[in-house]
Image (cartoon, rainbow, N blue to C red):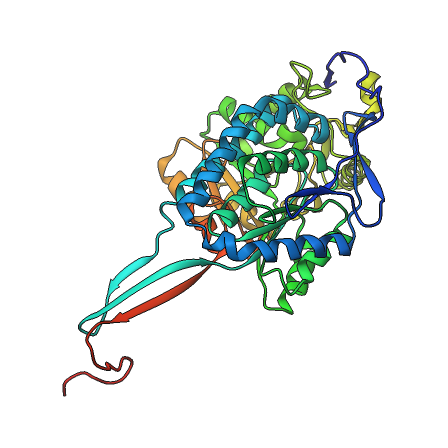
Amino acid sequence: MTEIAASPGSTAAVATPATFRHFIAGAWADGVSGETFESVNPADGRDVIGRFQAGTPADAAMAIRAAEMAFPAWRATPAPKRGEILYRFGELMARHKERLARAMTREMGKVLAEARGDVQEGIDITYLMAGEGRRMFGDTVPSELPDKWAMSIRQPIGVAGIITPWNFPIAIPCWKMMPALVTGNTVVFKPASDTPHCATLLVELMAEAGFPPGTVNLVTGSGAAVGDTIVESPDVAVISFTGSSTTGKRIAERAGRRLKRVSLELGGKNGVVVLRDADLDLATDGILWSAFGTTGQRCTACSRVIVEAPVLEPLLDRLVTRARGLRLGDGLVEGVDVGPLINAAAVDKVRSYVGIGRTEGDLVLGGEPATDGELAHGTFFQPTIFSKVKPMARIGQEEIFGPVLSVIPVDDVDAAVTALNQTRYGLSASIFTRDVNAAFRAMRDLEAGIVYVNAGTTGAETHLPFGGWKETGNGHREAGHVALDTYTEWKSIYVDFSGHLQRAQIDNQPE
């Protein structure tokens, strides 16, 4: 039985929750409709974090207009000066790291150590992109003609629509906004409705850091009212979205009608390959962290273990024993390993997939919502493991986004690579082996944007590209210097100082 952490007592709010506002044109403002929605603690639904503006298309339009008006001045601000504001923002996040992390755990549910890591990712990407204010490299190349200069530079696109998920409510907004802002774009930011408080705290610090009015705008509300308005606005030049593949496809269709640039970071069905020569204790550590960290609610979470048959049982024994000892509870309680799912709908989705899994494999652990004691007030689910799952089973193919792990036995390394690649996603993959040849083959052959050797499927670093193949996205990458590509246009420039007309792109070669 999975352990339950002792609760420090009810976290139910004792005072009237605060009401928070949009941030438009440098000022906090009520929504046009006057309607609000609540954000609640998923570890204790009695704890209302606050009330937030239920944004309308009119609110989104005002934010877009503010960003459009601010764009010329922000674009004209020298990039190193833009970078200095990013540095100040990063410093403020570092100063408020613990406050942000605790607010995140309360609103999103991940345990405090993970929340601190989420904030640190935001700090890291902010500092990285601040430095791009003094780099932002183009190319200078020799011209084919004499007395002629040839070079390329990056320039901002315009207003960037930033639509973010709830599972990394600090890191992912920073991944998107920091490259957009340092390159000279302005931003309209719509966070997930499950984590509007984290977004509000982030924008408060951005305002304090000195971003000019209209440069950063925050509108809370539903995807239908706010998100669709941002996507379809002719005044928003680029969209960056992280979320489900289904929603991403709808955004691509709508934006495509305007030939709008769109960066999509979508689903995953990530696998860990364990070969017969692997260090099984190390593999167990990597799998458990990847499968049950953030309660399985990461796009890089491991939901499949593809294991060579000779080590199936010893690996499974280790996984079940260790997973049974994981402690569920409020992530603010010391010693908790697994927090809640984000909301009741997520519990229903996971429970539905467990029902499917019962017909497709052997349930060896978990399989039910966790409702004992104080857990009854939250949206908890037991860490769940299925064994003897076929590679093409639904629980081995479809994104569950919860603490459900499918163990898939295979005959050999070739079958393992085939099984791992047989999904419509391709974000993160890993292999555990002592065979350097097998490791290098996996590095070459695994169809994923991120590959780990002797580590789990989570743990990307901000200075390398983040993104995936196939239905995981549309080819763009976040993090690393390549993140600038989403938010910039290339301009090639030729300067002819010969004093007479020189005609390029004609046959001017001597006979």
